[in-house]
Amino acid sequence: MYHTKIDPVNARLARLQVYEINDPDKPVYHRLSNILSETVSQTAAIYVDQYAKIMGLVFNSEARDYYIKDVTRHLLVKYRPPYDEAWISRCEDIAELVYTSRTDPAAHLGALSVSQQFELRTVFEAAESLEDGISLVTELSRLYTLDAEIMLTKNQQCRERQHYKWVAKQTEMFRAAVSDAVERAAEQSAESNRKADQASNLIRDLRALADEVSIASSESAAAMGDAANTAGSLRVTLDDMTCELSRASQSLGAATQVAEETHQTVDDLTTQTASIQSIAQMIQSITSQTSILALNARIEAARAGEAGRGFSVVASEIKGLSEQTAKATEDIVSRLGGIEKASDRALDANRTMHETFGTVRDLTQSVCNEVTLQGTTVTKIAASVDETSLSARSSSEAVQRIRELVDGIDKEMTAATSLTSDLNAQISNLQAGADEFLQSLSLNAAQGAIDNRRYDATKVRA
Image (tube, rainbow, N blue to C red; front, side):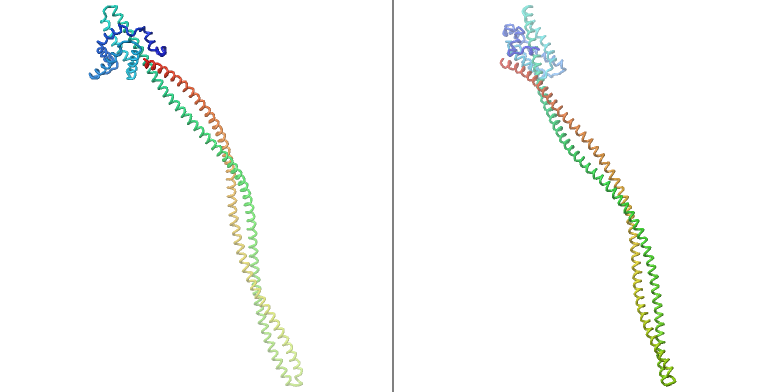
């Protein structure tokens, strides 16, 4: 486009030179202005009606009159000489107004073409001759072309300016989005690293705990095995004790039976002693009677005198025998009393022994029952110990599997940490690439802004 080629500060003057408008205030320009001013309202009406037709619009009379007056005002300014840099500036203002009012460029050019055809006919008809008509049409066509170029150039500049603003806005949004994404990615990466470190610490602690549990499980399994062996030995010992207690109970039963027999024997001895005492008492009675009879015999022998001397000797002998018998009987009775007391003590001791044997037998039986119950309990304990030992071994194996899983997780965490580091590097590359891309966009946008400022500066000076 022209504006990209004619880029100096004096761009408007260069435009005039390109279109060979060296004298901006030539008489022919005033003549064209006067001719066109007479029909400017008609030209404006043609433009408005044609634009509405192209766009499919329907204006009421009030709206149509408003647009016609507005177009008329711009046309009067547009064709007023001199055609210098100020005139170009006015054309640029009209072109910018057309752009900012969102006027459709194709519809505008189509309506402008129809209205310009009317103006060309008007100018040609107002010419004094054919040559004069051709000259007027040629000058007006030159102005039309310059005006069209100004409008297209300004339209492009406005579009580019809007595009640069859009690019700048999108660039800023992109920069903000990329920066936010990179920042969030960096934060998430840092958080991932922090959590990975925490997970690694937990895994390390878990591995140590698993080792401790594995050792404890192994020791527990070994202890349970020893306990099972001990329980088995204790069961054997209890069985032996039960057998010994059974034999002791049987022995106590036999001893109790012997004690009962001894008691019966002593009781029989006591009975016999009582019988002997009765006989001894009888003997004592007889001895006493014998002594009385001997005494009576001596008395009678004394009375008989010499004839009874021999009977007196016999009576004395009988008395002596009677006295000896009495003494022997007393000794027997005394000894029988001792035997009776000893028998009573034996009976008491035997009774106490019998009761003691019974108590001991009952205690032995109770102990035997308790030992049997303890044996059953020990059997149950041994079974529980076996199950616990099996559980301890299973627990140890489970802990070993857990440790293997923990090692696998640790490897995965290490790989994840490595991937996070790679991600950080990719994020850095993304940030660098985004910065480079944004810098390139910024340079292009800045160059476009400089072009627009140069063109606007020329307009201000004009």
